[in-house]
Image (cartoon, rainbow, N blue to C red; front, side):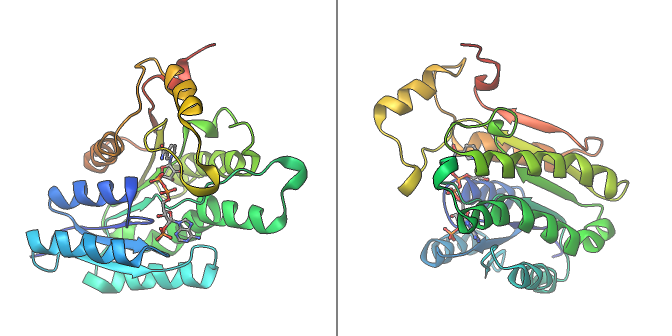
Length: 246
Ligand SMILES: NC(=O)c1ccc[n+]([C@@H]2O[C@H](COP(=O)([O-])OP(=O)(O)OC[C@H]3O[C@@H](n4cnc5c(N)ncnc54)[C@H](OP(=O)(O)O)[C@@H]3O)[C@@H](O)[C@H]2O)c1
């Protein structure tokens, strides 16, 4: 059995876990990357391996640390001896009001959302070329229109958007590079959590008047993974929020 292999970063929980389940359901073997969520990662690979023996494994790495990013790339290839798809999903997300922001926040947001996806893509480029593979970056509609109060996150995602276009050129013709830009799907947690009133304001700014589901993002990732003639494209999955004009 030599099924294709996908590495999904930040995949122990939430949207990343749904992407992993969806690719797995389509016959991919999945490498679940996590940083702190080991319990959730363990539970997810148990669930997936129960469906298909040895079809899911997990790998830990702090994407703030470039040497761990390089180790993750090496370990990903050696697990099953091939890698076909990289999904850059992991992301730190918290507000950084301009006057109170510091270098540590800059590093945490830029490293997880931009620097790690770049060096992971670079380290995996040869293997992905060999497999005629794909990179799919999970961006954000706020890469185009800055999210107020979140300047560093917005800058990082804007960089990831340009990285998608740039690497589509750099890695052609061997590797397709595309992006999915979510609108509101799952409400943020911890320092970025918002109350129900703020949530409703955001929902009202979608054309479809609701949030999306993790499956909506996962379906878009699967669609892009299955295409043979699409590269350098970014698909907004946002219920029309990026079109909303007032
Ligand atoms: N949720 C939404 O509605 C929404 C909207 C727009 C865009 N997006 C984008 O969609 C993607 C998934 O969203 P989400 O809300 O599911 O993400 P999330 O829960 O906020 O974060 C996903 C994972 O990223 C990992 N991560 C963060 N910093 C890391 C680091 N330094 N090293 C390694 N891993 C790190 C965490 O892994 P551990 O838990 O293992 O530490 C976390 O579970 C993200 O790229 C996000 O920007 C989401």
